[in-house]
Image: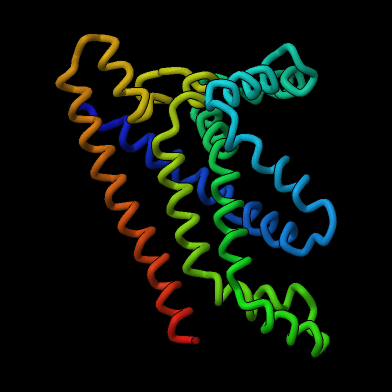
Length: 223
């Protein structure tokens, strides 16, 4: 059994999670500070979450294709995105960003507002409050969001297939390997990949529950 799709999936998911983490954190923090229009910004940042993955992949295909000025500029610079591993990473980043952003935002909003108000009253700047108060208090929820985002990237299918294709050894992920095996009538191989994906999913859920439970225990101890 060729395990290349496993390593490709893990690599794409890890890179996408690392790339998404800081922008997702900063976006969540800034939205929590908005007093007006926050719901509009939240809707814009969350759009990929409600769109079908194939629609996201189609939009990325149009954006990076030769039919747009941006796509032509990349092509002239010798930068290829479509049907490449980099394209799969971009698809995963776009798909998991709302998961990362909304999860972190929820964790930040769980921090006791009285502590934050007290810090502001003492003249502390927002950046200092984020580093010294908010992040330490919300860290279990933030870690759980990162784990969940990794899981989402690991199982991404539609957008990846649209922009990166199904190239063996290059862009074929575990989810695409299941699809390919079923298309080829190799149900036994598809079962193997399904079991591997389920095992990874269980491990990820355990990690996410661990971080979430850690946050609940910390909150209960503080009370």
